[in-house]
Image 1 (spheres, rainbow, N blue to C red):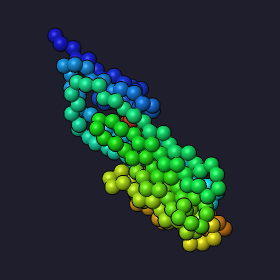
Image 2 (cartoon, rainbow, N blue to C red; image 1 turned 120 degrees about the vertical axis):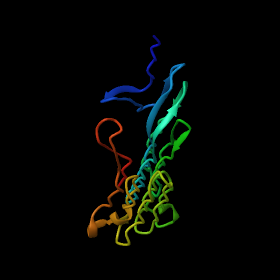
Image 3 (cartoon, rainbow, N blue to C red; image 1 turned 180 degrees about the vertical axis):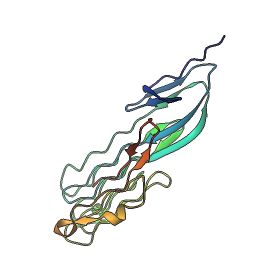
Image 4 (cartoon, rainbow, N blue to C red; image 1 turned 135 degrees about the vertical axis):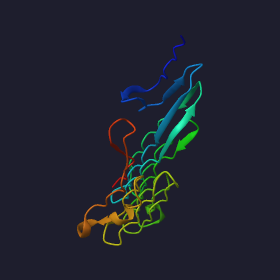
Amino acid sequence: ETVMASPTGGTITTSGNYRIHTFTSSGDFVVASSTSVTADHLIVAGGGGTGWDVGGGGGAGGKIYTSGASLSAATYGIVIGAGGASASSINNRGVSGANSTGFSLTAIGGGGGGGHSGSSVDDGLAGGSGGGGGTNSGDGGAGTSGQGYAGADASPVSWGTGGGGGAGADDAATNAGGGSTSGYAQGGSPYVSSISGSSYKYSGGGF
């Protein structure tokens, strides 16, 4: 009798008939020799940081979901992208998040939020989901098709800001806020998945 070795890598849990491998840091997913598996993947990149002061919200890290992928015996390197830092000095944008990769797929890091200066630095950066525009003049950054949505343009009111785009819906543009007029901007909606065995929210936009 031949006993097939189970794959290794990440934190391993089970849910019903599913074996779940969760990576929160970079590592290897190993399918042993003489074995093949069918897998679903959810890959999420690091989110972008918020812009300085009255800056835009960071964009959510891009997400990629695939189902029914056939994996042959091999070692698959998994890279988990870190979130970007918030702006550390006046007028700066937030730092974009880092990409996450695995199984020949790349989820793009979220765009940094726009700064607070009244110039082009107020625009959010493009990313998996785009960063929101800063102050009341910045444009939201573009998202990556299939991975996330654009950040919101800044609200045209005093101290208006734009929320970062999310991976769940193209709704950040409806959530711009500003000063005493309408409160803080809200980020775009997250992507909801039960791939881990329970329902969780991933890649929500920053504010």
